[in-house]
Length: 247
Image (cartoon, rainbow, N blue to C red; front, side):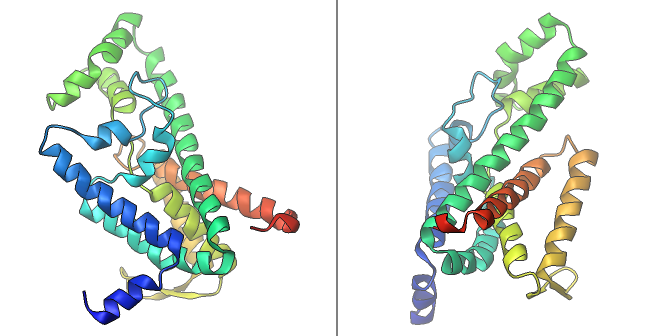
């Protein structure tokens, strides 16, 4: 590592730095364990709360697991770009609370939306079909298959595929940056044009809302992203009304 790179890394505030380190370590750990026949994403990822594989600790641990290097890179890059500034302004304790509050809040909204979808799918299935999905669905996935019956297949996806990634918390960080530094000019990559942070956040939020309703069956948890923004907005407003409890 060159001197400049080392100096840059040392200048990252502690919470952001340690979050990035832990996320990187766990991604490479997932690669190592996969070669040993163990899938960390299936252990630490967040399952639907009605699934037999759901564990309460997954509400936190899913935030440290990722689906690959690209998924990790974009989340950690955004955390570095925006999170380090917020931590420098807020302090480490306040940023730590905010990050996990938004991450868990994102998971809760995502789970609630999944609950509504599961209820709708179950209404179209017989009790026998539902029992089959619950008892056999995981093994079906482990064989790289799914049910040909559309509703059974969709139910199996919701109940037995874990959600991973720090995106919910990262979107919360993005929302906070847009609220605290609304007129900061950001340079987009695609297209390469400048845009103020407040407009970037509003446009991104609108896109996620649209995609959440129009692409409900995609492998991207759009409502988790929105949940991070929603819970971040709530916490910022609560803190604004209780300035004496500023962390």
